[in-house]
Image 1 (cartoon, helix red, strand yellow):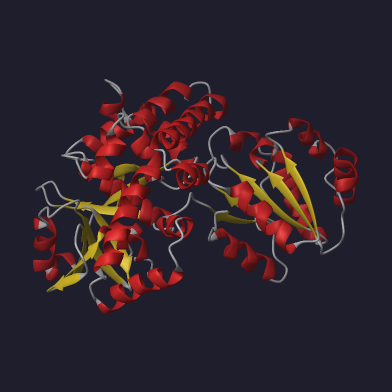
Image 2 (cartoon, rainbow, N blue to C red):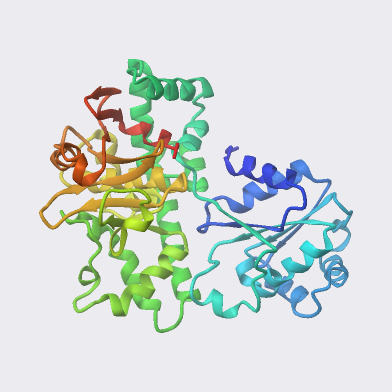
Length: 439
């Protein structure tokens, strides 16, 4: 049984007086339904579960009146005796709510009525195609929380790493003290496994149960193919093929020395005019994340980002690796990667940051100066270099030598190191990237 951080968030929502209906938004198969059902059965006397994707007939419940008493009547008729509506003790779960836009509209009336808690899940909320089908989004009457696949810390929990070990890592980070060799070795081993497996719950469960990478890979590719099917099913007809072309170009995009996203890599003659909407669709579905170039390394980062220059990373590192050729998993676990490992470990750090809710930024100048990531950390603008080995960080050193120009005073180097510090550059083992949470 996987433990997820979303469970704490759900409890905080429940304890909030006069809370809105809740929408858990995230990519397909990231564990939304499992986590919501687990929470509801633990904290409510009665649970009403309606899945619009598995049973489209339930959509008709919301086709007529949206008065709450009428909806209770229709749900009772559809679900029978297992549907018990008791004020303040019943939680209604509306799963895959994007399949029933009228159910989204009804959240306003559930909020105004106030007798029952409502939790919804949605995989493709906000993508083009869904928006056009939605009658009325109840602005001010719903709370939206983003959920992601398992992050590295949740992966550690799944592998029975105790909290005391994670607390020790936090202490080493705080005091800039080297991690004990035994812990360091084990964490590096788990990091490589996470790079191959990623955080999709079904994949993690299979890995924990069997440790057979061929089974893991099959599940991952089934998920990737499922994303492709969604692109065909939900996207506008004119965009279907372009969305798939964008999606399947990502490994090539990251394989370039200059990882800036280039539409010409998708297809000869491709341009932002033709493909920007397609790329946006994939991002809105939670499958990828953009990493924007900064005009200058200053806070606020979003205010200094150039929205026309960006890299694209997969939101889950395991799914990204599954899109590469067979044998890549073995090479990662054995440390046999050559040039492409930079792209893999950059996507790993993007996975760390994205799953902690960070927006992604980097810094590149036409002169060739480039820093992998730039983050707000402990109130400062911090450079973050991701090095799979002892690769040089000449660009970072250049930036740090000129604080009067770049306004940056410290940097973090993630790689095959233990914890250390040299001047204003802190070196951390790559696995510690998941701890860089503080803003």
